[in-house]
Amino acid sequence: MEILNEIILQMIGWIEGTITSMGPFGIAILMAIESCNIPLPSEAILPFAGYMVSKGIFSIHTAAIFGAIGCVMGSIPSYLIGRIGGRPFVEKYGKWFLVSRKDLETADRWQEKWGDWAFFICRMLPVVRTFISLPAGILKANLWKFTIFTFLGSLVWSYFLVWVGIKFGKHSELFKHIWHKFDAIIIATFIILFIIYLKHHFKNLKES
Image (cartoon, rainbow, N blue to C red):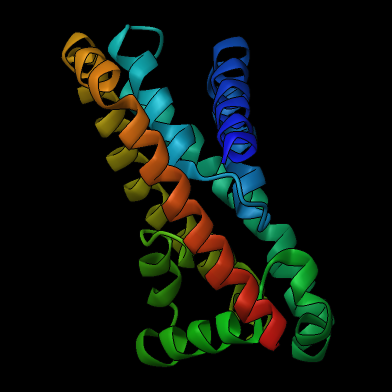
């Protein structure tokens, strides 16, 4: 637990340092990493960007737009891998991108139900949003439509999480007192949820 706690704190510190030193470009780079199927949660990136917005460092529109641009930057390489390699390649090597067959089946169902709009909807959903690009490539979705829907869905997601960070920033003193009172419980809960997520995800990869 202590090791995982330290890893999470180090990751959050790195995210905060990147955005502090690079500003909006740091937001774009971090969001691109997340969209490349690397487990760097936007739920930790964008709220801190919102916190900086609350301090007047940049605007909510700048933070959200650069967040969406970063999503597109990271999604296109994943899309191309899926398109060029096809389903057999992704089924065989998808685990290296943290994408399981079950993830592909989930994406297939979304795309079958919603068509190209699935790429817009999935960008506003936790977890699903990180692995939708590979299936989009496999299905040979129109690249322009995929890019536009990815940008728009990510923009909505970015505005929401940045707004959460702004609210936190405006009431940081209140949250600070709550955090100091319940920090052990909050960290423990976060670690437990993170372990459950990893266990479930890697179980899917093992079954692939």
